[in-house]
Length: 178
Ligand code: 5GP
Ligand code: MG
Image (cartoon, rainbow, N blue to C red):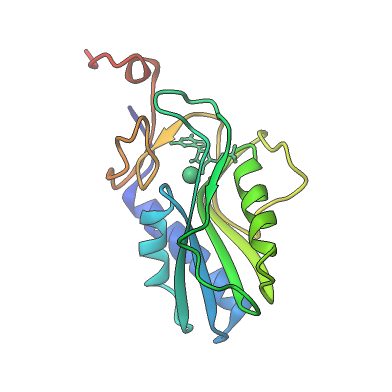
């Protein structure tokens, strides 16, 4: 595994994101919706950097299946979503890759008639976008490599790494490094 973003860089990135979000909303109340499960670490760190009154909701979206590093069918579960009607809503996800996940989530959440709906992600992979939509806030652009840590998993592991790492071929094959 190779470290891509250090713990310190992540702290600064989240602060940058929080500053942009605060600049946009000022002290208006917002509802932050975290996309499970990858956004939990970002969500926990980000909300503590935000000064406005805020509610937290969750929505579940997953497209990666087990050991696959390529997307499978997208499944959205909105049972945990609070009422979004007339609220200013900010959707949070870990990473914008092809964009299908965020695009579908936004489309579905719009049906709840929020007053506004914006999105923020920790990471955007360069050159991968397949949808006509971009997140409003991005903390870091990264190269097209499979990353783990800071909430992102491989086969449900590594979410607890405090830094962001690139998985290398030997990790994907399940071998121990020499
Ligand atoms: P998209 O729909 O934008 O292609 O993919 C977004 C979702 O795929 C993310 O929420 C995340 O769960 C997963 N994903 C995309 N790229 C990576 C990656 O490099 N590492 C991990 N762990 N998950 C990824
Ligand atoms: Mg995800």
